[in-house]
Image 1 (spheres, rainbow, N blue to C red):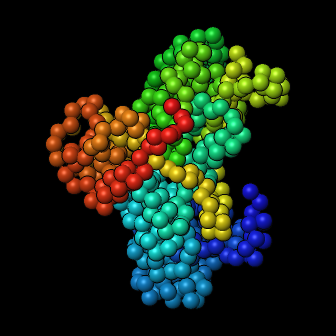
Image 2: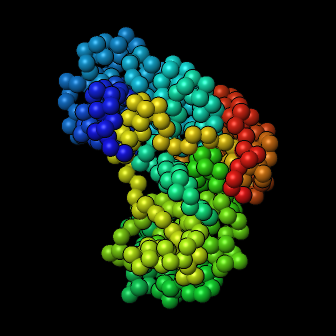
Image 3: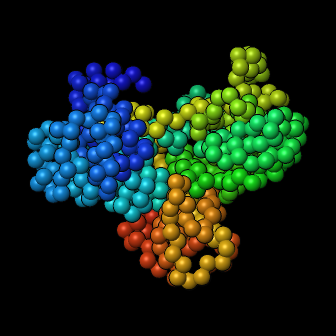
Length: 468
């Protein structure tokens, strides 16, 4: 998309945004990029840690006299009249400023939902970065936006929007998509000389025999099983991955092939061989799958960088052999090909979403999200009544709970979405391996619970979905 064309089409109009969770890492990348885009301007920034937010803004180069801490609606209004950016600690002060679109990036299910809902009800668009909010209330927020003629969208730069965009592109071209997905956040870097694997540059484990399985070979499942054993000391399956793929599923209709996802340890050049149907030598039970893989590479090789991919059936053999010759990833049997974007640039790309939504009323993500899948949780061990399901850590894990992604046809009516259960107390014991149900929660946020049920009722999985 040519941003200069967008600006020209609107006579240089400035798009103003509010940003919640403004002191976080994603927010920083957006604020840094905003300084380079004259047509984009923050109006009000919300974060509980105002001193930290102020220090970050100073580091980025925002002039101190352009910023003002506000504790009331009147102070926010005064800051706006003076042409300054309001910094607030409470989300209910956002509405006192004038802006076009909210970027919600708190990662807090209840607070993020409340701010997004308030924005839509006041006639303003929403770009949702908090996948935790989207996985519970996204369908309801999309319904509110549609009723009001507004945009509710995932944000460019994060994997869900990037993958949804890649799927849309592939469908537009008539490509026969078999599977879609992303790489996990951290590559597995194999040092064949030392026989070790390093994850995130900080965790190194012995990986005996992995170097012997660098080639996929003829028996793909067997090779993947051997690789998984070799790196079994490393964690697999970040909660954030499941959450992001739930957002992708609801926006595309692609569903998990298995509730824990496959997470194959894979090299980029192998994706087309791995994500084939089982009868063709791959790992998929069905077409129309959404999945995550762990990227395996050698030191010095380029990372997949949390990027996204689609795997398609090829069609004309000569066309795809030509493309194979140009370096594209085609399966050994020539029947499948992988197309991928090896990056996600976080807030550096989000301005595209903000400008598209405000200037053209167009979302970056899906246009008709539905309940094709649900992010839920299974107890990792017996959880007694009174257990607090604490959410925390970089990936917003829920203590004692394994994230799972359920197809709509496998989702119980009374399922508790994972991030509705977060921070709640169990009203009754839950046995190891059991799904967390709504009736298990004694103190779930009622507004969030209503949003979950309303969204599922208003936007069930389409009966006419073209994907199996």
